[in-house]
Image (cartoon, rainbow, N blue to C red; front, side, top):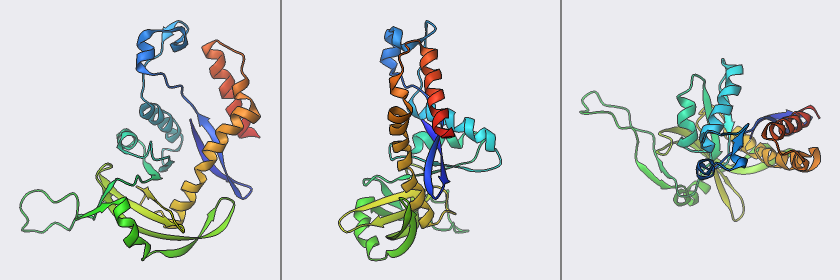
Length: 243
C-alpha cells in the first residue's frame, strides 16, 4: 500500500492512494482458486515491482515535481530505487539505514594526469554501527517537529556514498540515551531536520493500516469474489481519505 503523507491540522496523516495484493509465485503456479481473478491466474510481480508501478502511477500526475518516497528499511535499497530511476519521473528515496551497511567517503576529484576511469567511491569509512560512536561526539541538538510537537533531538548529518544504492546520500544520525538510529536520503537538498521529521511521519502509514482495518471496516468484508474484495478495499481507502 502507498499513501500521501500530509500535514492536516498540525499533525501528520497518511492518505491511502493505492494498494496491491501480493501472491507468492509458487501459489500462482499451483493455480488455486484464491490466486485467480475471473478464473485467470494473476501475473506474478515482486513487492518491489508492485511498489514501483504504484509510485509511477502517482508520479505521472506530478511529472514536473520530484516525488519523495519514504519507506521502511526493507524497501530502502536498490531493488526499489533502480526501477524508479529507470522510469521517466524524478524520485528521491528516504529510509532507515541498516547497521551492517558499509559507508564510503565521496570520491576525490579526478586529476588531469590520472590514468584510467575516475574513482566512484572514496575512502572506506566502515559500517554504520562502527561509525556511530565517533559521530556522536560531533552531534548537535536540533529542533524537530516530531510526533505532534516540537522536540529537541541530538543529531549529526553528513554526505556519504552507499554501494548498495550506488549514489551519494545524506546520512543523518539520531542519538538517544542508550540507542542510536541512522536515516538516509538520496535528496541531498533535504536538511537533517526534514529527514528526521519525514521518517517520523512514516509511522502514520502503520497506524493508518490499523484505522482502515478496525475503524473503517476493511477486515469485515463478507465477499469472496476477487473484484468485490478489491472494490471493498478501494471504498475503505476512499472513506479514510475523505474523513
